Length: 429
Ligand SMILES: C=CC1=C(C)c2cc3[nH]c(cc4nc(cc5[nH]c(cc1n2)c(C)c5CCC(=O)O)C(CCC(=O)O)=C4C)c(C)c3C=C
Ligand SMILES: [Fe+2]
Image (spheres, rainbow, N blue to C red):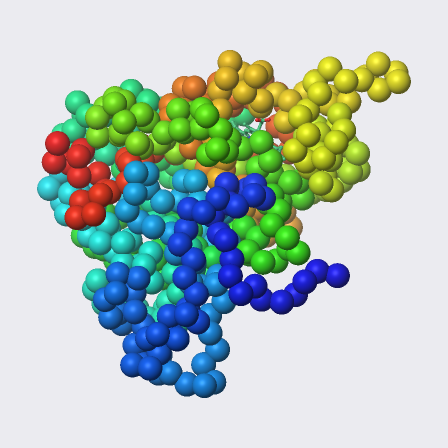
């Protein structure tokens, strides 16, 4: 029987989708905060400033679990929301600059967004007209991440600064892309372990955009809530598979090189940044669920129950690509998704997958509009997503059960230093 108790403290910040913990967040127990600040009836932000979300102290006040108090850092070498553990809720939103808005308006918007993100990620109210939606909640591992799309550079007269890595992705034969739900001048990724905290952030970001930018598309996603399983586990997707096992790990020597633009990389404003490929991938669940578990496992090349490779062992045992059964058949089929996508089958191409599942209701014909908001991070999409998707496009076993419905590619600059706004080196460089 799983331990149902609420953990006293949580170590958040796993590698996306993977079970082991990396301490990329600062977990601060609200119980401890109330212990020191409660007597005044005020809650202290971690900066020590008195902030607005205060509740009157009372013996009856239930302390937050550490889930609410977990906090991701806004300032850092990289923007938040890339190596942080998967959050339970996500919103993706793309904006186009409004007619007449250019570089000056974009700079002012990024300045507003930076201040809002910094404050909300610290569990403070937004700078203007806070809606109270996240009142009473801690930051709940909120992350807010900002990116620039290809079209942003023409709109702002910054074509000379546009990275070659932002060149449009090639067309893939299996694409069924909706242009209205693809790309965009600006992209914001919001993640949090509380639905109200995530919505609150989305609304604040949208209101900040004001007259400068209009929403082009917006998508909502989710993952399992932290604490739902007896012990930390790699995530499952809506096909029921363990998904994220072989993500690159920050502890690996080549992690930074694969995921982030180097400090001295080009263009200079992208130092320590990364490129996000975003694909809304519908899962054809009615077809998938008709397969036997054995057939489903052959599609991926891994066991459904525990994610172990079909060549044997546990989830983390290396896949043996050559191993055969008594009849000489490969245990991991030649077209299995987890075989085909491996870096060693794609000239070293690697990416950090950090997805959200989505479910946007049920179509009139009874088909669920559900799948994966596939987000992958890499130093260069031409050495990450593109070669792997080219291979998948030629047909892996999973292809018949999914449909790519929208696509985006965004340049996500490095983290903003204290006093700086995200993208300042681009907009003022
Ligand atoms: C172009 C990149 C990829 C797309 C698109 C993609 C879609 C997709 N994948 C799954 C489920 C699984 N993928 C797994 C592994 C895996 N997938 C990709 C890339 C894309 N997937 C990579 C690079 C890898 C890792 C390969 C490796 O390094 O060995 C797995 C196995 C477990 C794991 O390692 O995560 C599953 C399961 C779905 C459902 C999906 C589209 C909806
Ligand atoms: Fe995959």
